[in-house]
Image (cartoon, rainbow, N blue to C red; front, side, top):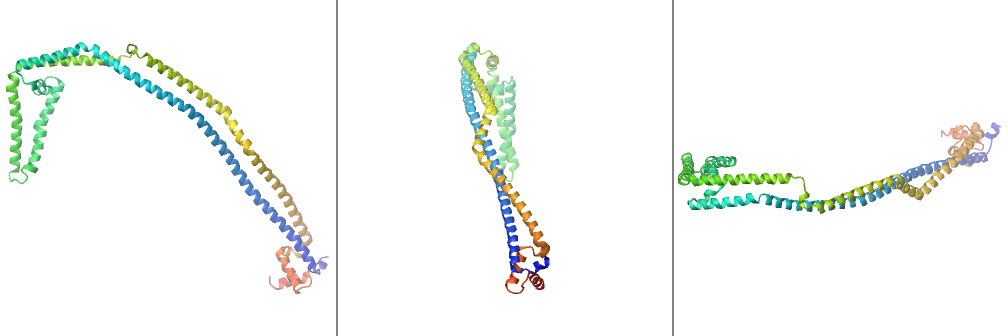
Length: 371
């Protein structure tokens, strides 16, 4: 049988070529199906992600819309509360000022009378008006702590700051090019210090000592005014610390604030209920809406995958059966080497151009040519 096949003419190779090309065609179809399957699986993955993204985006959008609706109402409520509270604070501040004015009216009037008394006293004894000022008493009739601080600051300015500044100014401007710069600067500073001291001593002798009794009466008046101011400050502090606002007539503001607080509590409760319904019901409804609209196409794509896999299974079986048949029918005779479309085509060419008349001659010629 094998010898007869080797003596076959070119028609035998045509048949082999046809069977081999049929297997190659099946392999091409299988490869094409696999490529289509690969692309379709990518498309399915993309579609599934797109569906999940749309569901998430839709849920997020609806949730934000619901939250914004209630948050806008809450913000509006809080703005109203702030406005009412601001009006209440303003009204309370006004009432507190009125209460302070009322409870300190006697002290205020007493201070006014004391100031009139002091002006009259100084005028009657021909004491200069500037002697009534706090600065004068701080420099020449020092007693209270604040006056001591003022005196210390004045001394530092007059005997340190001014001389130092004057020395630098004279050294760099007035006596810049003078050969006796240090001497002149020191002399100028000494003159200024002497002037300050002279003025202070003159004020002591001409004013303080001459009008000492009147100034002491003024001191007593000032002390009484200061005591009254401290008492007035204590009254204001006591009133400010009073937590009882019932005497200020703020009921309408309190009622409005309570109403707004209840409204805020109701809005917050409604928001919480709405979000609970959204989480338990609306999310699933939105998910179902998207799925109902888009899952049909996804299922079609998956069905196409199933159909492709069935076709590929059939093709794979056909390829295996055809390959097995070729191996049985031709492989044992031609050998695995010549069971390819390209090699068979070469053998056919050798027989068609007259180089060989039989299959065996074609194989020998092929091998002899060193191919």
